[in-house]
Image 1 (cartoon, helix red, strand yellow):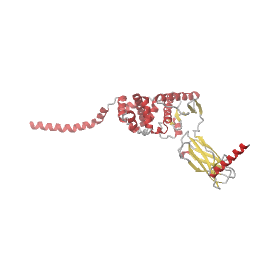
Image 2 (cartoon, rainbow, N blue to C red):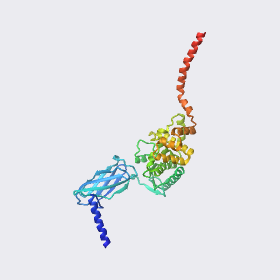
Image 3 (cartoon, helix red, strand yellow):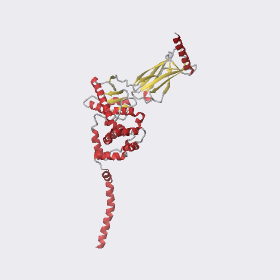
Image 4 (tube, rainbow, N blue to C red):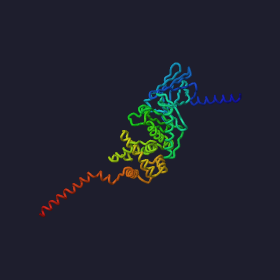
Length: 395
């Protein structure tokens, strides 16, 4: 009995302390969420009946984000508070977690706050089914359980492929959302204008979305998309904030190298670009890839071939050292110079020579050939005329 009285006394003191700070948390003040993905989020709260409410404010933010949204909510006569947020007006990523709470200012100057709650902003336009193993959780809404098991199998093989390239460990459960077509996936991820995008990962969320239409190519697309996006997630888990320092050509190159089914069009694309002398300089692929489809495909093809070349020439240990140096803030040129003792331009030249048999001097002379012809004409024609005039005088 004495213990219970003591606990009750401590609870009273604690509540008075919170009130003294101007912010008391109470279970009587609550808020819940309803949402329609891609359209709106509605927050519905309640306050104690008869409470002298002067102002009600709703707060919400993406978990881990420094920016908190704050807005005044309307209160009806029954103590119900509502606020509807148009999600097109805020940068809200699919499959992120949001935390939210309600604060109510009373006429006496006190403030009550609801407990902080979270909800998962999943694409609820579809009824998802779920299957999982020790490392992966797959979500799908078209197809049978055999399809879902194939997703898990490919994900595990992709993990093994990535770990054969670099010393990477998976942290926590990775979620894979499988859409039956690219249009629905792109609508979810809001990547309008990039119709060539077939899959996407948010490494910090540990989530990937893939588009896998039914048909004979479905398994091959699994083996291409899932290991690629998984590599981005593993690199983020391995490097944390340093992940954003990786040159784009290396980040995408590593992801493409671990694909179980390499893109068969890359080789033809590279050979054609080499013959036309239209390969992109790697110095232009450090910060971003071209946004147009043809430029992006060529950039991916080059990044894949060049990264594979570096792995073959220097091995996994040096490739890991390169990744670490970049993650620590070395720029695109400096990182490769320090790690591999060659400039990016020198390594690019060796790659082109090994992959396509290109001779840098011959290619340069070929580019200069029209100008060399003009120069030769400018020199030889006056000489020929002078020689002709000299012969006439001697005759």
